[in-house]
Image (tube, rainbow, N blue to C red; front, side, top):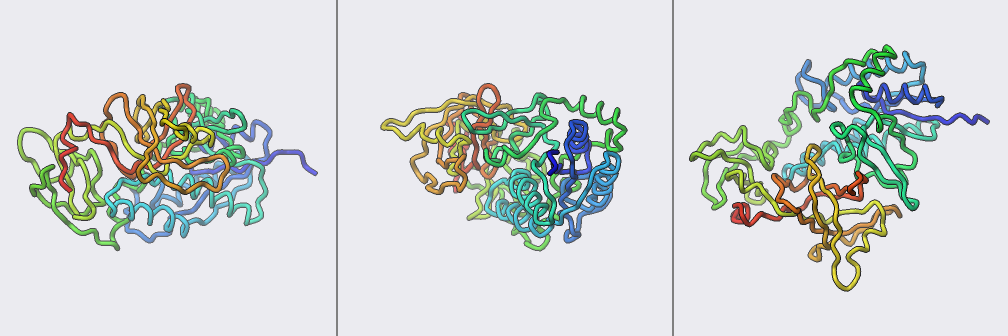
Amino acid sequence: MSTITTVAVGLSGGVDSALAAAILVESGYKVIGLTMKIWRGAYKIQEGLKHACFGPGEEEDIAACEATAARLGIDYKVIDLSEEYEARVLEYFRAEYKAGRTPNPCIICNRELKFGFLVDKAHQAGLEFDYFATGHYVRKESHNGVTFLKTAADKGKDQSYFLYSLESSRLERILFPLGELTKEEVRRRALALNLEVAEKPESQDFVAGGDYTPLFENSHPEPGDIVDTKGKVLGKHRGLPFYTIGQRRGLGISIGPEPLYVLGVDAKKNRVIVGPNNGLFSTGLVSRDFRFQDPTMAGFSHTGQPAALSGFGKIRQNHKPAACTLLPNETGVSKATSSSSTIASSGVQIDFELAQRAVAPGQSFVLYSEDGLVLGGGVIDEAIADSHGEAGSIST
């Protein structure tokens, strides 16, 4: 019986996943490369655009993965997840925008596809491996039997926000070889190993070209009114999916000396609400599906008087973690519990020490400790308006 540990690595065609595989090979593991195929040509996305997660450039990415696997001398397999991607990611994306929320498809894709279906289908195809690894910039750390994500050494590349919903039991079987490296070090090591993708540009868009319009071509979003915070009609929008909190460009209106921003989206009345920049600030938010990585932390409010829990929170990937406190959200607290014993469900209200700009329902709030542990997270259900701004006077 072999004692060699086998690791399957999610290859995307970029330098990060390629070097992650190379590091594991150098460390003596038996490595298998896996790529999830999600594009099946069902959308009219122009070819030749800057690469993204979803688009016709996938064939080129798979060719790059094949070259990497050949260079490293590892087995390689493509797993078709196009149906799962359509059902779990794209349908979610469309539904959230139609509901007036701002979705984060990367979080869903990582949780459901990359760390879920990809691993499961690989096993079903007869591939045997002990661990799964990716090229994400993130670390992990265990405390009292619970495995936490931890921010990467390269804070500018840290991707823990996208992975916050991975429970402890899954994290125990996942490796992140790049967690201690900087992007510069990754490229330098990839060049030294003569990996073809060493200088390949990064791909950060969700859809090739950054235009979501093709994803809605069969759902025909309805145009509606653009209104101010008092309900006065200022113009017309072309469909709710094309507007998000904080947006300034593409509104097609210019009234008064101050620029106007999207302050909210009213799905019931099919309206986009705009106003000045000061209306974008929120003192807090509510997340009704918030889950703690350590289930014992969910008891912070389960005594007579609610107790506050302090930490640092991010409301989007590129947001600087802001000092905040958590309190139980007694209204509409989710009663659902996770099937995993490592995550407890709890509705919470987050109060920021300083008001934060453009808190968008549908995005996720992720809570960090001072030393970078991911303590938990959940989808943002509503923003709490800053009384000094105008967001509180939005008419719905």
